[in-house]
Length: 270
Image 1 (cartoon, rainbow, N blue to C red):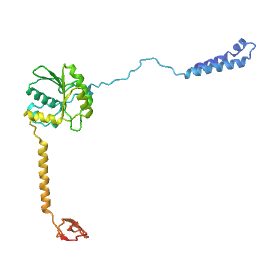
Image 2 (image 1 turned 90 degrees about the vertical axis):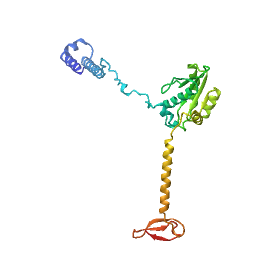
Image 3 (image 1 turned 180 degrees about the vertical axis):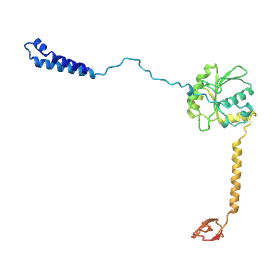
Image 4 (image 1 turned 45 degrees about the horizontal axis):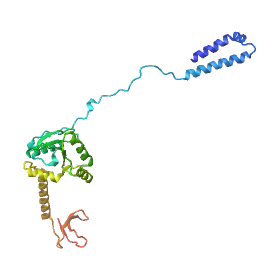
């Protein structure tokens, strides 16, 4: 565009006489110079205006997340006998639900495992008694500090209708919060907390967990007691009755001094 403006300028200069004759009665020189400057300004302004290039607009590339798809938590496939010999703390969610299924079958119920180990929609088991009465069971294998909240109770109340159940039962290894207990009483949701669950399973007789932790703790306590006894046997007693401790003299030589120093200044060589 700038080159075009320069070309127009030189053209006007070459045809100065002709342009001067065309504009009679006017100040030809001033008009021509103004006209040329006007054309140059227009050309420069047009050249400065950014021109949008037409073309295909590149869409942002979307990376596939197929390799990063979250997988469901894998559950160790332990046998029923292993589950019956495991403590509640060592059971996974699916294993706890299987344990309850075994319990209810032995109690004479027909058990439908509708949500074991997956998305249950608020119901894990549907148990049917001999009269055909259905109960929706929600199982929560929680730690002791993690109590069941109100939302879980409400989900069970709404989900039992989807399974055509009349009654509902919430079973947890921990406990319910106070608002959850009030909600359960209001909507007639029966619930078993940790102590009740252990009591019923122990009364069943088939659940006999081997408490490996308690055995390890007892062994550790016995070792600590024996070490304390050995340390007490090796302990030297001062004539005042207080135990003597290891100290170092000015020259760095070790000796035994009374632990009540400076009240008692008794010392023995090592």
